[in-house]
Length: 399
Ligand SMILES: [Mn+2]
Image (cartoon, rainbow, N blue to C red; front, side, top):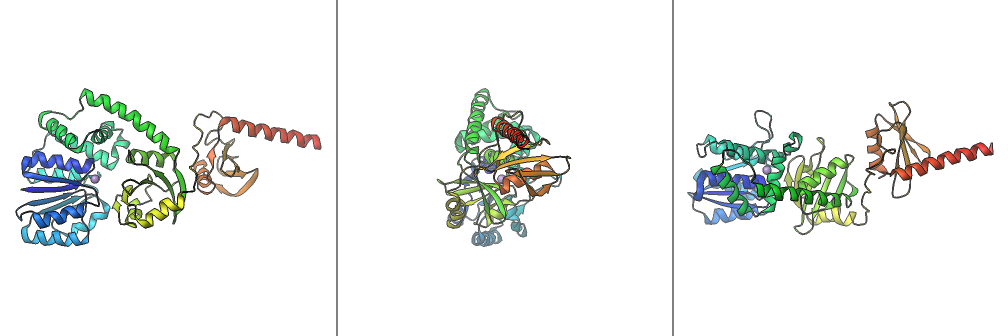
């Protein structure tokens, strides 16, 4: 017999689907949240027979269970842990642990891709086109490579995963992988997936208006309350607000925080680890501990959301050397411009700030971090210019 303890996301369930393909009814599977894994391990070690081979995928046990599993391995040899999370790298010290973030060709791995490789190498599963395609979609989604590649199939697979129950998803995928030459969605799925895409877009648009900005330690963070479409939402908010180091998405119901960053120099797994969580450099999570609650909820509760930059401007547009006009909640006005396209400067209420910047983006980054200003609509921009022109006239009259 086999037992698989895996994560309850697409990548974790991808492992379960491979296990069912390989072992049919000879495998018992439990999908867990990050925090529920340790209970399951304890239950397994207390109740299962020593003949059962234990797989743990996409998740890692705590220190106590790490020792217990090692004892179980020494007694039976029946354990394999496969993971691709940075916070699990120390499991590589065990014969039963394999944690790999990037493969030999430089591709980011996922638990499903590692498990597929394991099963095929050990002669437990036969490689087919359809299964390889499925595994690749899961990998691209989990590593977010799909976005770079414009691989919408991968995103759709994850959307479908959230539209149906885990059991139904497993059943549908197993059927398809056993009978089809290639992996694809059926017509009904395509229809509901396109409806789901519209719904996701609306949700993200709403959440953009609820994002607040705060500083926590050395970082500028965006904080939002959300419980759905977290990967897409975190990515959108990050791209829209490149001046923020990372985005924290708080789910009050499940008492969890998800962290995302679009930046290479920020490691959100280290931020999550401060609160006992973990994950990847660009995507991580933790429980909403008392400490995290104080910092992310209590300390930010009074802060107003960041107003969004005006979107449909024709005149007040970013990067214009003539000038781009910003405003903040304290009604301070900022004009960002460049005389020579080399040095970018900022006027605050018509007074030049001492800093100068090497590019428009740097200047805007400064403005958004330190002054929390947003791009104003064309009509305000035109009003402002008119006032400036009138001031000029008055000046001439006085002379
Ligand atoms: Mn994963």
